[in-house]
Image (cartoon, rainbow, N blue to C red; front, side, top):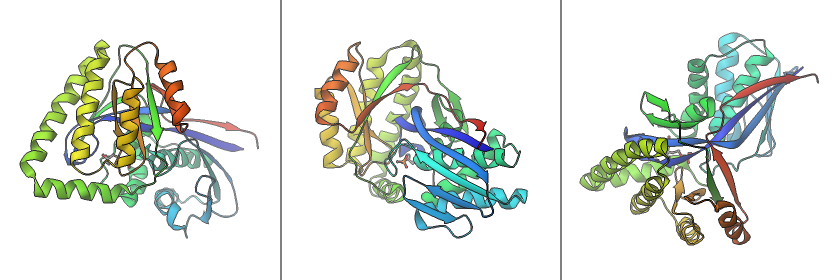
Length: 313
Ligand code: PMV
């Protein structure tokens, strides 16, 4: 038997970085993510096609260390051994789209199923957070929460809830192709906060109010409010030093192509932007944009969380 699990990637609509400092964020699952397949094996090993890496879970390569730490903890706690995990990812890695959290969540669910076990939502969250902490010391947990639960999520510390939008809507994602290190970018924002505490507090407070306003706006279908809030956040993120000329250019082009709101998503420093089109002709806008920026796609919000199934090998 082969045990499959698929977990979605994510975008952050509003509030990245501020969420690390206790403020809220709004995040949405992507309609693409990571699939893990677990099967019986003599050795505990992981293979990631996207990373071009293969290693024993007990002796991971650097790129697979975070994931292997999560798996090692699960296998040790349950005294399980004898599993091969293969990961296939449909989202770019190190691009701010939550691939590490989706990999951990999908792999943990597939491995538990391989041994006839089950992890409840809290257990899954805690095991996946082992990997996220290894990726960057102080994760908010929003990536893992969205990979497990899917949907459109309001996230503030332990306060987490699903937001039900007035109707499903598309988000455009466009990637620079530049990989970056979330930990370094989090440190940059912490440094900004240390140097300019009053300014940081003003922006964090504004961000919090805008996130709260946007929850209502999304529920009522007032997408123009969300678009304007995205633009505010882009300015604040840029001023805190986590945007880049490539991201700024993508944001400018996306707005020029008709996406009323556009901003970087995730930690910044490279990675991707998102664009929100508030009219009906978003497909035409995407086509025109993609002619120049082929590394772009539309994803529908909300999308589902982790799912699992099995097949005969
Ligand atoms: O690793 P990324 O790019 O998905 O960043 C996640 C967003 C941050 O707010 C910067 C970090 C976090 O843990 O919330």
